[in-house]
Length: 114
Image 1 (cartoon, helix red, strand yellow):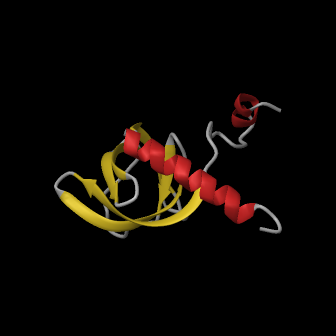
Image 2: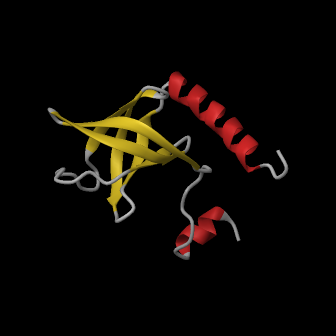
């Protein structure tokens, strides 16, 4: 079954593979800044750890800063018990290079016998 068909049937909707990470990050919304962690990321989106008492809803524009990926603009897709699901609006070249490095590391970590 293709990705689009799965999405229609309530399955996986992501276009890009997500890589599990734990990266310290700062979420900026309006004039406020919140500490959080990036839990997974892909070329088009990421998952942030939940942040208590932040007034966010689907569609909210945010900025995410992390040392290893730089700063990216994003939009909240949804909130869940897992965290804040976001779609990247502007993935910088630095972010794309960081994603390639993380993908390589993930491949190394998950290869049996290495």
